[in-house]
Image (tube, rainbow, N blue to C red; front, side, top):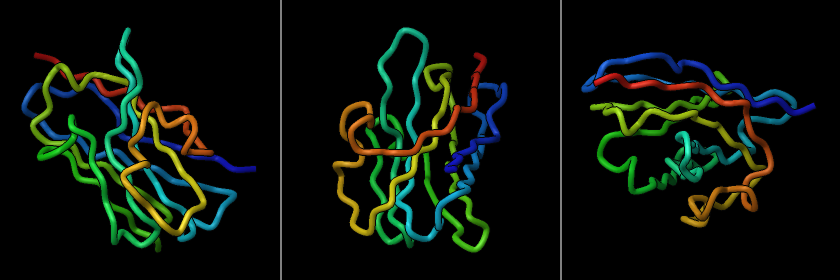
Length: 130
């Protein structure tokens, strides 16, 4: 049984930083492309970032560029999303996603991710106060 589990979401003040973590069980982590999406209340789900199996390729959504950094540690079976200079518009549920895939393209950021990504976590909530 595949399980994707996010952690690290909490309340943070505007201008602050937060690092989200994501672990996967039931699959070989090093075989996985990984990604992060978010969904704010009343808004469509949007892609934040994705990373290839070895970290060699990364793609970022417009909202993430310049402030968010995705990384992974295959030895720890964990992917991360470092978020800096947070603002209230970053308040959302953040979802980690996984896909057994060797190649990675910017297609990983397309739409709401439902067609591209097979495995989703339950989400971790990030709230940014002004």
